[in-house]
Amino acid sequence: MRAVASVMPKADNPVARQEDEHIARRLLKSVAQDLDRRAFGELFDAFAPRLKNFMMRKGASPEQAEDLVQETMILVWTKAGLYDPARGSVSAWVFTIARNLWIDRHRRASLMPLVALGDYDAPSGEPGSDEIVTRKQEAGLVAQALAEIPPEQKETLMLSFVDDLAHNKIALRLNLPLGTVKSRMRLAYGHLRRALEILN
Image (cartoon, rainbow, N blue to C red; front, side, top):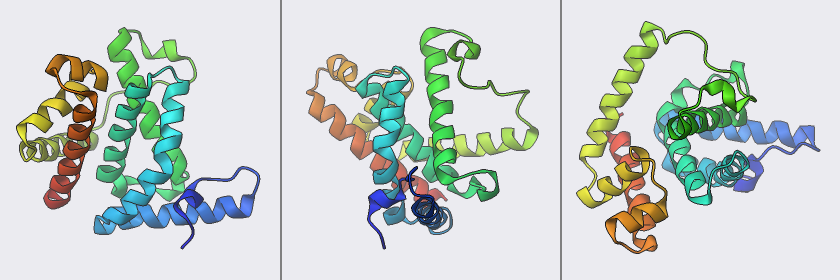
């Protein structure tokens, strides 16, 4: 198998780009069908640097960008089965998830309407009944998964997602070294992924 970096599309080589897309789809299919953590790890390693650069170009701090990358990839893990190749490439799908998370984060932080971002279309209409049911089911799975995370890791995770704090702000609030906060976040994501794997 080619190196992980080969999952990245190559604009100057259509043949390589097509092969990279084939690899990315195979990895995502393994995640969706088999909850293949190794395949997910390859996808994470391939997309994380690009996602972080994308978030920082949109104005996120490095810490916020890291948080959004983690959140994006957790959604890739939990929603892998929803990917439809007929609607676009894996890369486009992953970046759509990231873009939507950025819009949500930016809107919460600034209390500005979505149109203020300018370069993205706002979602049209209300979610359908099937989508509402799916969201409730996913929320239930996440709640159950969170119940399995040790309290100190859950606290760190919730400060990041609920209070929208960057790692350095969490460290100040909890009076902990920044390295400890980052370690707890990594452990929390690991616990969350394992719990979601069991629940699914």
